[in-house]
Image (tube, rainbow, N blue to C red; front, side, top):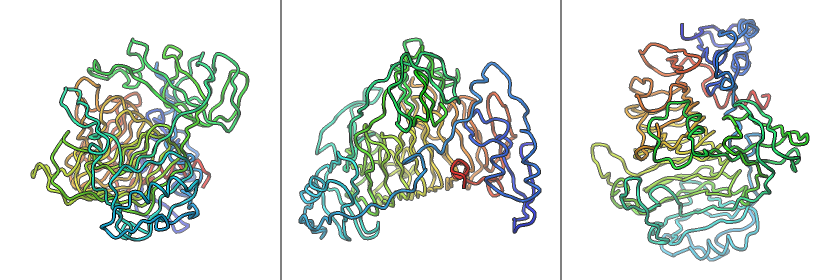
Length: 532
């Protein structure tokens, strides 16, 4: 039996059957972060369910040589300030019109935008309704600055030139095909910082996945409340890579060096022992030379809000022929930033997020460009590219891109409450792991697992990926062979396939999306963690 079916009683509870995944109690280790009782606490308070809450997990005790892999890791410790505060509403300190911007759809307003950003030390710069022509890259290199329009239907930033024309950057694919590096990076609003922070030491003792304490090689010069970064990489034997793929990587000969970055707030310090607010999402082992330093990105609290990006309506030339009509990027040295209520029209690619704890809430992707392939209908390359511990929610992809949502080399990302014409989840190889896709409407559902990525870069997804409550017009299935290791989770979908509930490997639970609880695993976890 793949699911529990119960009925709410009393207190106005609905009386239709509600199905709650048994994975929540059986298999927290594989990427679920709610214990069996937590799921019920989050979802409902009916007496019948409260009685069931007191029962032990259905699976009993977990045993086996990979017991350290069994520990839960919380998906809600993503986004700005770990989701503990809502996205802020920053006070307006300047108006772009005061710097000479016209917003008339004809005048080049680039100089006004650059000047406003230069002289506004902090706060929001209001961009009133209008169509603003911009012909250069707009850089933001300081914290606490917001660009705010008056709505996606009122304020439009029209970029007339692509990145490749403004700042040439020709590279090549993994197979040697010459292409612009803006085919997979960069944005015409470019938010960037630097990583500061003193080095604290090297992890001296192994810390298993799911634990929250590390021991470094000397007394830790860090205080509770500060953030630290743990950086580790393979030392030539490929053991970190195999850990991330749970031993099922396929050919990884073109991955030069696997690496992991994990950031957490510190809650306690005792000599060389550091207690973290978050649980480790991978093992941390001295054989991978884990370096620990203060996490101090120089650009934080930057927001882009309530506006549209638009680009020339020219035919899309196809894969690896993009010139960089890309709206927005958060690159290294940025954290705890956001974009809210943005619309992107006729782009080569959507936002590229390389910073950490970046939230994008309210994102629409549209295109009226002629598709290079009338059959496939793709009108761009990367629709949205996630960063570590980032959150994308409340989105609508109204066109097909080659890779709709990409998580290459990404960990801890959450993709929540969105829809598309025919969404694909592009696990773009290079060991993306511990990412969550929840409460999503694929639309047609013909290409859920369509992925890119070069040859010999491992399977598309690494371990601990979770898909929860995924709907589509077509029946859905477990990913095809070669997509990822068995250590993944797919729960809540329309499928006639037989359930597979392997506590040490594949977990496939085809609960009907209309009845699964919680509907949104991320939101349920967040409510539980914040005590709501």
